[in-house]
Image 1: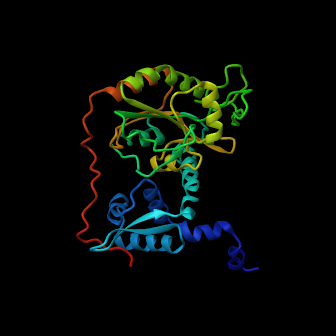
Image 2: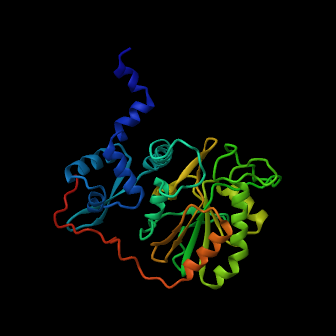
Image 3: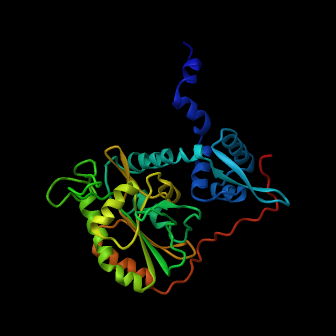
Length: 326
């Protein structure tokens, strides 16, 4: 059998034909981050307009992207992920997770970050960046939530690996890899990665909730667990704020949040973002190793006088010489 015939039935080969290219993957990375217009993509990527046009055309022809007009005269388009395109989001996150561990790290499996590490630098660089609009994540109250409460003074968004309450129906013990550095074990020694620390974290935010509420600061928790698992945990812990499920990894990919593998599941490493009502990330806390101190610091940062970042300009570039694929 010739190689070409074999490749016709090979999913890896067929996927590589669509996205197995440096620029195609980076175009998808930027679109997931919310950079959906041609000029913005060209500026973020530093790519020639010819190459960008070719990659956008290929991804559109394969149904990964859809062109949506946002201006008639002259015609201008935004490039958004289709459902087929959203199916590639976990692939992007898995590639990032693999590279963070094996190319940018030393191969160690860890649930936390290190000073100077690639994931630590990436989280720090979120300060001054916007959280993409249009993201909606299912919450423990059965509703879809914007991760950013735009009617609040600020939003404290804390990410955690996973929660588990042994013996509570609907909240399974969280499968994982015993002894992952940076992920505390269950206090009775059952080695449930993420459960003990994440339960403590939720309880600390619950205890501090009256102060956040009185200060006009919203609190949202987020993990890659399902909404059902989180809802059972939230009921058991009587949490006054919603936990959001990023099981489809859309927020994780949009912000390029650091992850690690627990068993077969991707989990977000523990971190805290303070986000303004304009959707701009004001402050980042990562790695989080002292949970009580981090909760206190998050409230202080969220209520501090704030001046808009001046080091990042998020205006759309001009379109005087704009050329898009026909």
